[in-house]
Amino acid sequence: MEHAHASRLIVLDTETTGLSTKDGNRIVEIGCVELIDRRLTGNNFHVYINPERDSEEGALRVHGLTTEFLSTKPKFAQIANAFVDYIQGSELIIHNAPFDVGFLNYELACLPNGQTIEDCCPIFDTLTDAKKRHPAQRNNLDALCKRYGVDNSNRKLHGALLDAQILAEVFLMMTGGQFSLMNESSAAKSNVEVSTEIIVRTLANRPVLKVLRCDEEELQAHEARLDSIKECVWRL
Image (cartoon, rainbow, N blue to C red; front, side, top):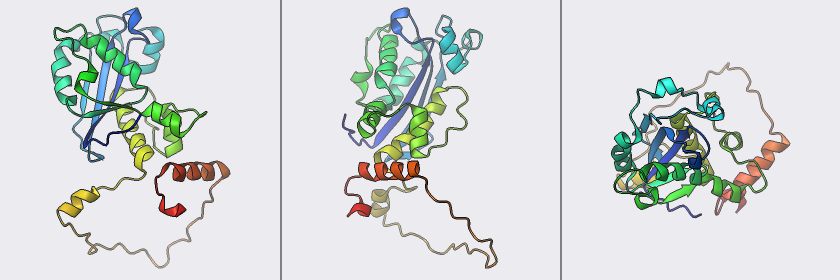
């Protein structure tokens, strides 16, 4: 799957009452984070949803959202318009997209206009992409976090917004490496010059820095990362 490099990307995750819509399972949480020109904007979308049923035991262990907690939340039909308006015209970044898109389309099919996610947005599946980059390796979100050095230490339970934020970081690392705080093209357009006025000097008597050597696994991960970068300057 090729990434379209849209200027507005929405990284999306859901939590559900179970694994399959065939068993009548529903969405209980949607979390989205917005990237514009590969920068996090803070314009997020997050909602808990009353699925009008209990979560299966396995799903409840994953997300921890009880029937009692969700009973006071809006139903999907009540948040559908706001959700569709939020994602409209963007590219969706989803890990294992068929799962989330299948549930979202299942929910949307219950509404009068019968709209689908594909009607609104192109979709980029980070799982499909990760399998191409790292064949025969584990490519779940936790494995990708470890591979790309993304901190997921707060991920005690799955949460749609937290997982979307983590996936956004993984996606940025996986598709382009370290990303700058200011998009280069934006800086060029505005003729912004980098300021050198603020210089932080270290103390002359500072302790000697400890040198940490890479182990073999880290060296292999580094080589694999370089392999994934087109026209890598370190390889020229």
